[in-house]
Image (tube, rainbow, N blue to C red):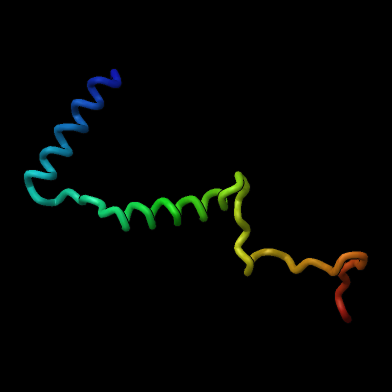
Length: 70
């Protein structure tokens, strides 16, 4: 399907949703928060994935090796 045809179909759906009253219109604050949250989760702001603290392994202090106490 051509990009023009896809845009035409999507446009009709958007207009219908607004006429019906079911379309969501983002406020500036909602959009800002959604963008901020998405950026934090996906990349962390510097092009690398974030590892949640609870799933990250504990790092050993510099100059030592991590061993289990038995």
